[in-house]
Structure formats: structure tokens, C-alpha cells
Amino acid sequence: MYARSPLALDRHGLAFVLALHGAAFWGLLQMKLATLPAPLAALTVSLLPPAEAIKPQPNSVRPQPKPVASRPTPAPQSTQLAAPAESPTESPAPAPVAVTPAPTVAAAPAASAPVAAPSQPRFDADYLDNPKPAYPAISRRLGEQGRVLLRVHVGNDGGAGDEQLHTSSGSPRLDQSALDTVRRWRFVPAKLGREPVAAWVLVPIAFTLKD
Image (cartoon, rainbow, N blue to C red; front, side, top):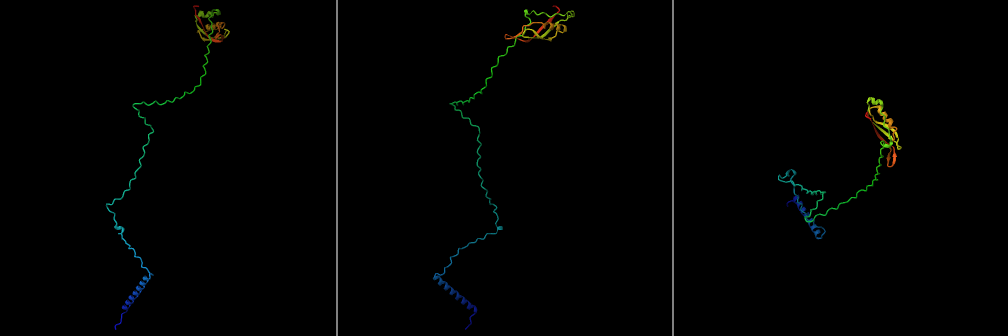
């Protein structure tokens, strides 16, 4: 008889062990002590090429952002009011006119009546009998002549209170003779209404060689 090799013996032993385990597992299944695992889902793996291999397409167009529609800006309203269209058949009623009362002006005090100026004193009345100034003899010999104008203040009694030389005749002797004579004259006093008042008056005296 031929001797069996160890390898063949091991194969037969392994087959026997597997058969024994299969019979045991079958028995467990029959007794529902073990369940078969659910079938595993198939997992599909897609391998991507490396990043260097991905090249951008020459004709690819980058998507542009959508334009944002701007809201229309409202037009500024005009502050001027449009004039109403005139009706061809009806004329517009006139606008009411506001009447502003005139400011009250305080009545001005009544102007006082102007005060009447007094009448001038008189010196030519016949009843006064005023003498003429004396013609100085030396002035006659020298041929001096001229017109003297005196300013005399006449009191309310008709007397001369003050005498002033207003215009000279050119000769001191003639001027002095006129002053000395008029100082003794009487006058009709000036009157304010019916009352005699004092006032100034101009008295002319002429010296001529024909007198």
C-alpha cells in the first residue's frame, strides 16, 4: 500500500471541517438561530482625472451677472400751479380783492390861526407937527447933501425910545442932525388889533441944497 502525503491529508481534513461547519450553519438556519446578512448595496466609485488634466474650454463663456433694474427717479413736481384753461364760452369769475383797512391816523391838532402882525408906527401924520431936521450951515457951504435912513424903536406911547443910523448920508454932520431931530419926534404907535404895541420903524430924511 502506498503511504498518503501530508498535503493530501490536510486537504481532506480541511474539506471535512468545512462540511462540518456548513452542516452546523444549516442546522442553525433551520432552527432560525442565525440569519443571513442583508445583501450589501453596490457602491459605485467614479475616478476624476487630476486637476492638471482639467483645462478650461476655449469657448466657455463666463456667466454675466444679471443687471439690476434701477427704479425710475420720479420727476420733481413743479411748484408753479398750472393756470386753468379758459373756457371759450364762460369768462372766469373775478378773484375777490382783499380790502385792507387804512391805518387810523390820529387827527392832527388844528393849526392855530396865524398871529396878525402889528401895524407899523407912523411919523407922517399932520397932527404930529414934527419939525424938519436943521441943515447945518457948514454943510451948506461945503455943498454936503444926501439921504439918511434911521431905525427908530417907537414905544406904545408914541415916543422914540431908541434911534440907530441904518444908512449914512456920507456926511457925519447931516447924520447927527437927523438923529437929534427924530429923537424929539412923536409917532403913532403900532397896533395889534386895537392895542398899541412897541415896534421898530425906518425913517428916511433927505438933505438937499434946494430946500
